[in-house]
Every structure is written in C-alpha cells, then in structure tokens.
Image (cartoon, rainbow, N blue to C red; front, side, top):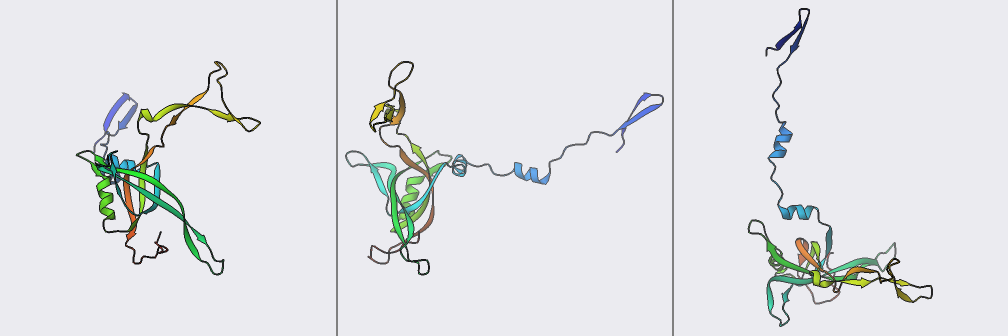
Length: 208
C-alpha cells in the first residue's frame, strides 16, 4: 500500500503510512456474540446465601382459615453432621441432627423470564421421601410494618441490663429490629440427590 509523502523542507521528507483499519480479534468477536445472562442467572451466580440440607416434604402456604395460597410453598430444611461413635481404627460414623430451618418458595418471575420455584419444588419431591437440595435464597423482611425501633441494652458491672442513653439528649438509644424473624425465600434450587425409603426403620441412613 503506498504511503503518504509529506515535504516539510527541501531537505527533509517524511513518509507516513496510511492508518490501518481496526479489526476485532476472534476472541473478542466470540465474546461479543456470547448469550447474555438472564436476571435470574446473574442472581444465582452472585447469590449471598446458599444452604445444603435434606427436605422430606413440601407444604402449601395457607391463609389463617387454612385455605392454600396459590403459588406458595413452605418446608423445613434439615442439616446434620457426622459423628464418629467408634474409634480411629474402627470408625462408626453416624449422622446427628444439627438444626431445621423453615423456607418459603413462590412461583414468580416475569412472562419473559418465569421462575415457578414452588411448582418446581413440588415436582422434584413428587414420589420421593427425601431430597438433598442446594437452596439459593434471600431474606424477606415482611415489609416495614415488621420493623420497629428497639432500645439498646447494656450489661452493668452488677450483671443487670440497663437502657443505653444518648449522651447529647439523654434519650434512650435505639436501633432498627424485626418484630418477627425474616423469612428465608428460595429463588432457585438444585437437586443433589433424592430417593424413596426402602424400610420403615427410622435409623435408615440417607446418603447426605
């Protein structure tokens, strides 16, 4: 390709090549054509809360009169730990329950990106006695009516509790608190394993 010649003086000339046209590298081109994540996929990728445990049954969320609320489910997730009841040479590991936590799930999302979590959970547990799940969830504070100003208490040297006062005003120092514990609301889950009990023995070992 011919260059552009510029003459600055009778004794000085400078050849400047024409500007090259920028082209995308194959890697960048592939990156630009990559399918963009949905809002749910991004939420799963950056989830703040995940918990693994065992679920035995899913219950419908009901109103005070016992009427089921469409698209809502609730359940407990059990967590346990293996304890060696034997010795180092002859181990005998048995699972001991640690805690059970309540979770809720709702069919939600948008027409473009539906997320029927409750329906999918019920389908996953259909015909099963148990399932080990990995839950992705958020706290649900139940709205501003569930929040109040709670007085801050401090322990005295005598072991009693007293209200902490603001130095400037002498009024009780407060902080926001929940009247009732926030719900744990599931927005995605993965089935790690599931099965049906083959015996009535309550000590049957579930592989989790």
